[in-house]
Amino acid sequence: MSSSIKQCPECHSVNLTINQEKGEVICRDCGLVIEDRLVDFGQEWREFDHDQASKRRRTGAPMTYTKYDRGLGTDVGQKGDIYRLGMKGKNKFFRLRKWQYRISTAIERNLKLALAELKRVASFLKLPKSVEEESARIYTLAVQRGLVRGRSMESVVAGALYAACRRHEVPRTLDELEEASGIDKKEIGRTYRFVTRELGIRILPSNPVDYIPRFASALKLSAETQSRAVELLEMAQQSELTSGRGPTGIAAASLYVAALINNEKRTQREVADIAGVTEVTIRNRYKELLKKLNFKDSIKKKLSEMSR
DNA sequence: AAGACGAAAGTGGTTGA
DNA sequence: TCAACAACTTTCGTCTT
Image (cartoon, rainbow, N blue to C red; front, side, top):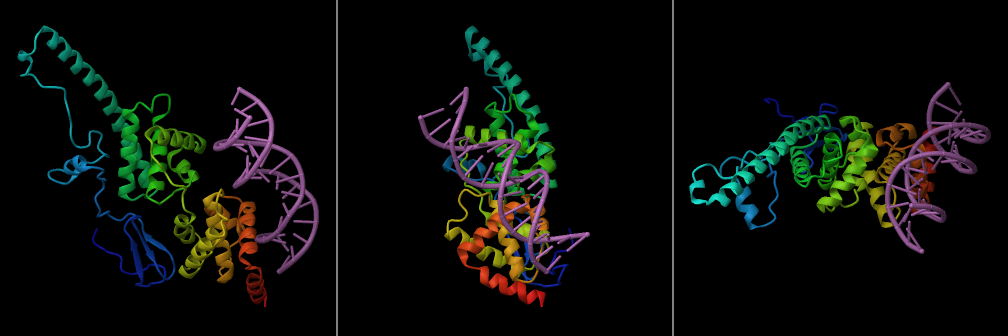
């Protein structure tokens, strides 16, 4: 951990920008995502009320959901207090302790396995620590509510990760989750929907803009193209072209058009593969873009300039 | 030969009776 | 529970570069 990046390895620009929330360093000149596994300097938990605030702030060891017992541990009463209970009380006490033991060991065993899997998948996807924490939290809640029963552990892990990514506005596609976890994407979608519904987690529809930097980087497009794509996207959103459409398709179409305008043409197939949609979808989206935004003329002009 | 285009049929999920 | 429906995919033939 000795070398800190100050220069873009691609274009040697020093014009880098850091996105703390997403844990990414992006080169402003060429759009390359240089480092996306930064240490997250923010707190990795959230405080919803005073009680949680006083419990979670660091006084002592940090509490973490990525450890199966959150770095803490609880047991139903140790010996010592029993003598104060009557016969009935004693029985109840032993019963409770037995159940506490059974339940907690079952849950803990599950969590140990699941969190290891979660870590594996999260690092495969190069997700920032904050997202890993969030998904671990979601998973823990799911286990405690018995939502894993009848579902494979791995699929719930994948669902939790998917949900956490979207909450943190670093959405990954279901295809990426499928590749990383080896779970069918339909299954991931199902458990994702089930878990979020049961836990009452509200998730906004993902914003196409969040996909742009990653796709642009994968396509090796310049920063200008990237920001042009974002502009197009915003115009599209204002014309209400985006509602009800798959966000990846919209992002892909904007990038495709932006690349055309900036003379960095990529084929529809290239863009489609990266974005995980088909060429047809890109065509449809981009046709809508041209129509509503009256870009047809300027595109045509660009194209004829290119062929000259 | 490769890419772009668009029509037509198929798929999986949501919605509303 | 079922049918209608929108978005998206698959497939394929045609046109353009």
